Length: 266
Image (cartoon, rainbow, N blue to C red):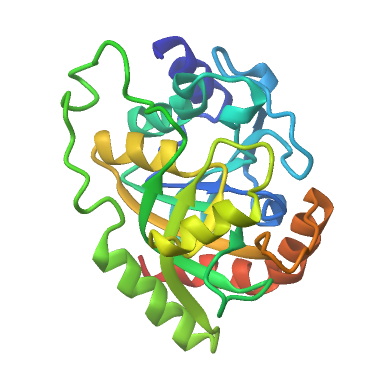
């Protein structure tokens, strides 16, 4: 970790970020507009390369609305074959660099039947159905305690702030529970029915490992999902990654506006 941190500080002239943002599929445009320093993951010691379409795979550092921000322009996923420790390693690096608040974003399929493509959903809680946990293994007491409490992962003050910012921008914001599966296959109709009955509102293949580690590290977490498709149902609709990217592109203007408004008021 120290090698990674030293490399990043050298490349960014000791930039000290206070807010971290992980940008999900199709949502990376914010980092194209604000980029004081850019480092590809392939250059960073101990980072793994993102292989998914819609993820550029870069750390981007910028001053936005007077806030020092570190953005991950694309993330790594468990389904790419990376370990849980590899995909959450950047969160620990953010913590070590000084980040206090982490905004997690993702593209997610609707389970709640009132949601439609291009809606934005604030994550109020999550259900980890990935079959594993990023904290398995030896514990580093300098990062967090062995058995972290998960009662308040997504901070209520940040949820309320996001709601207010959305209201100020006349954005119809949803709120719900994010269900995480390992992927990469989409869910069957029976699985979607199960998720709905067990309390999930949107389903995806990321975010939860990062949220667990961020909470473990003592970071304040805000989660926002871009609803990119109606999840598989017994109506026989077909799903594709291209559809996910297209819907994220349709939502990117209001998504970007919301993130900028949150940064301004956080």
